Length: 342
Image 1 (cartoon, rainbow, N blue to C red):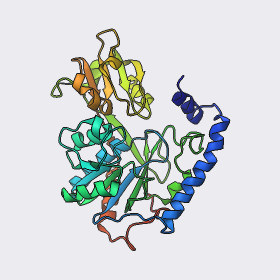
Image 2 (cartoon, one colour):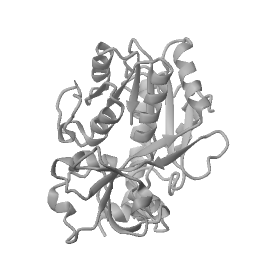
Image 3 (cartoon, one colour):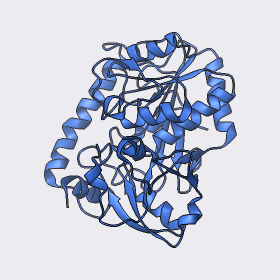
Image 4 (cartoon, helix red, strand yellow):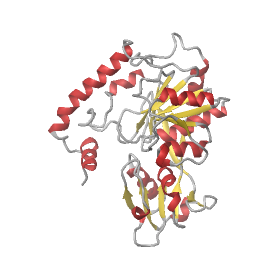
């Protein structure tokens, strides 16, 4: 068992976290609180842009469904007359300066999630550690609203709307801060967000339900070739997932009647062709996020399975309404306590 797997068992299972993680959680929590206080008091400054900013993030380390939510939000905003652009840190990429992605981005340079969002939506996407600078590239490209992917803890960029997405099955694990638990910030931080989106499971009162729906499988070697997912039912396939919660993908395939051989990889894994040599000719099914990194060496029987996020239309209406109403006093400061959960 790897160190990462062991911590996951501690965070979401019945194992107690090691003593050294509990020891480190206290200074981590103190540093996090101090940083937020400095932004709240104006000792550190958030940069305000000339267009509204929507931040989509989560409280836990690892995946909770941010990327499908960003894609759904972008499509909903565009349908309501906005010209959205997406800004991302570009985790896993090697780009050194903020830049706009082309129509066919290289995930090794830009990161896998920004590449996926650019190819899936067609809207401008910018990456960079300096997110305000990257966001200005989007404004120059015509964006009239910025959607910040995984930006909840990136307080240098002022925001008008905060959306926190939660894994509806795993929630907050053991409820401890990193590294003793999965939390980047205390769960009390939710009181300061505008919307809480619950991905899967049963959404409690005050949270917006979101469900992921799988589409037809698409060939990596020939994207025009598609196969309905039920066509794989009863077959034994290799399932590949290098995402924050691979088990979610494997279980969804099993729910479709597919016999799955699991191949979980670390989140943002950089694949080589040898990683997917399994010694047989069975189909290989993978997430769309993995597929953007494997298409250059894909075999004929490799398929990606796109997912779409389904959310209530009134949620998107409520987000859009906050963009057109004047923000009294400008964008919020970190920890300002603006609520309004829907």
